[in-house]
Image (cartoon, rainbow, N blue to C red; front, side, top):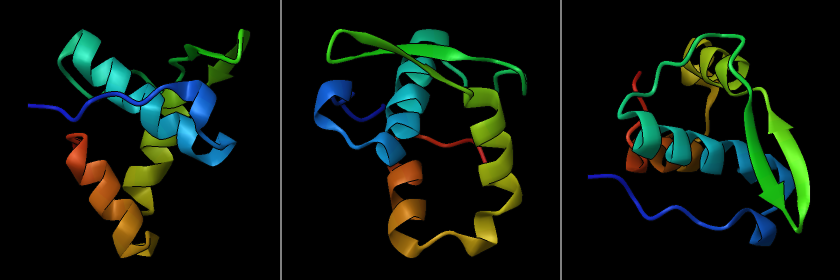
Length: 81
């Protein structure tokens, strides 16, 4: 179904939205939260808020500008295009 969700502590900040997307997909079984949805992640014991709805909306709007690698990462976790 969905890929294993990596830990946030081992990721660089630009990758954290991908973890947030994967966790939200696993928890909610869908990938279209409202634009104002904020997902809270724990990174090295520190709470990090990811504006997940904004990230997903912007990613969908700019899909044609994504690198093939980034597109593949999003496909792997089940991105709803």
